[in-house]
Image 1: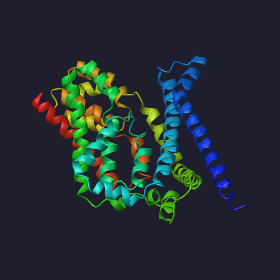
Image 2: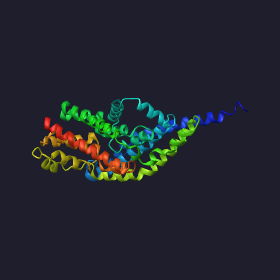
Image 3: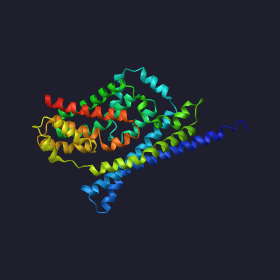
Image 4: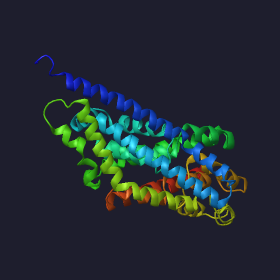
Length: 348
């Protein structure tokens, strides 16, 4: 009988592995089919998603599903990984590395994850919960919506590679500079308590090595806990974003933020923040404004403000960050974007 004792654990682990593969396949299929399914449904109903109202509803359904899928998937995966590595180990590893290297890696990771500002938040939550320093995670949160490979290619085709290099370099530089400044501040207590006090955190504190089944169970509980706290805010944030998605007062911007207005950069940054788009989606609008005579730095500031800061992102981050850090984050990114616009205009 003693020889047969380990068998239940083996069988349970085997079932857990099969369940993980099945869940991964289901998640991947849902994520890949998300936009296609909604587009097919609207076409079947005879609705043109290029029109204002159908386009807003299509965007709401597609983006809500995308962000919720990312929230569930990323939090679960990072939760499972966290149970294998203690936060102290992560912090010790990063502590031994030069800060510019850690910030550079975070910025590059953000650049290769083609997420909008809201879609970046699930990964941000997971990184904070894993014990990664807040300055490094904020660097990722800034860089991820600002720069990605799709936007870089589209920018190069629309504006030329010189302006594209300026945009990408400024975006990554802004993320790293602000990350370095954040590292000088005491911000560890400015994250909501529930992000760190999770089932996987409690499992990490136990002595002994947890089984795969225990790790999956803790990650599942953590995902349900975090998703249960923020899902309604995801829906509210995306609903607001859908209402303003694609609506850009191009004529108003061209009139009041033209080359004759010395405060044009400030105007487009303030007007760009409430809007909601990803980098690829805002490029055609920016190209039209550039063709109307808007200065290069002003166009870059408008693009950055639209993709890096948004009202939906503010609503979601408000559930994760405390007011002081939320104000520091939004204020510093906005000021950085304004500084980039004025600098580019001065040397263009």
